[in-house]
Length: 341
Ligand SMILES: Nc1ncnc2c1ncn2[C@@H]1O[C@H](COP(=O)(O)OP(=O)(O)OP(=O)(O)O)[C@@H](O)[C@H]1O
Ligand code: SF4
Ligand SMILES: [Mg+2]
Image (cartoon, rainbow, N blue to C red; front, side, top):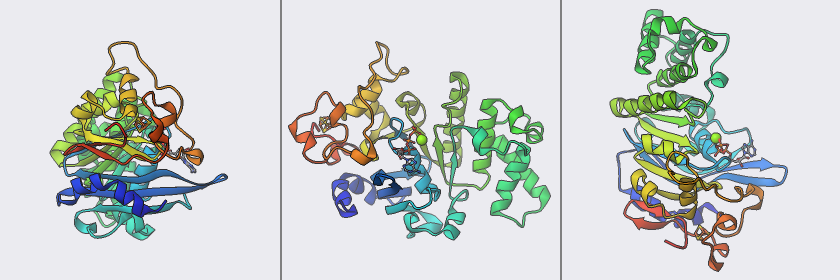
């Protein structure tokens, strides 16, 4: 199955984004292939999406649906040997260049400066034996090696303040283990902001935090989006969290976008049975009894020939297994990949 076909079946997404020149990021038919013992698999399969400046897109899906792999493709951080197809374009300095075809040299000009990422567990991305301030300084120097020390220090404090870290001077002098989980995540966000990126990818940034701290981090990301006109790709497996930060939501299943639309609409009236299943399984959004989705995400080495959700879908019908359903328009800015639409 070539990427040409993906372009055709994703025509809805293209129509929506093609006319807009203000999109910070436009992704079209992006595919990531990885070699496994059982052959090549596609954790990201013909994904199309767009994010404007100051816009937050929530990317939702169960574990293994390909969310992180998509983010790593946008950061040029895929595992060695990965094959990338399709397109990802940034406006501005890199407009016209396809990120999917960049070499490492160009990636260094994009990563951190145009697109930055914060990860789920800050402890794995922070250096445990280096003071927080020194790590942020290192991130700043990586982009601007010529900056005088005093200016680097000023920017370190400014980044910590941006991330609403209280007493930034004291915190900068501490080691990561001396900070609470929430402060560590703020330090990560400060580091991500140090290079002045226009797009921030947050991959499950609050999963390891308790609910109160989680809310504070979500509020911080929302403030940064508004005040810095930052594009935000917010990744989570929890639809309840998406409602708090994202204006739009894209639902991913087995490497493909199965539903995309305004967050309030998708949450109130999901059109793909998988999205409806996620809603019914979300403790935050469900007042009555929780109903987990039966079954598990299919193995990428053994994807069903038709709708990938078919083996788990209570509404399946014979045609669902015959061919991959197209992404069908529900309204002008809402689409779902289901024969019921
Ligand atoms: N190095 C690798 N080689 C082959 N397959 C991989 C590799 N890394 C991940 N995968 C597979 O790619 C798929 C997508 O993984 P990914 O980490 O993107 O999922 P995710 O949506 O981020 O899940 P989670 O919510 O658990 O973080 C999974 O099926 C995973 O097993
Ligand atoms: S295409 Fe068929 S199997 Fe797939 S989600 Fe829709 S109804 Fe269910
Ligand atoms: Mg992940």
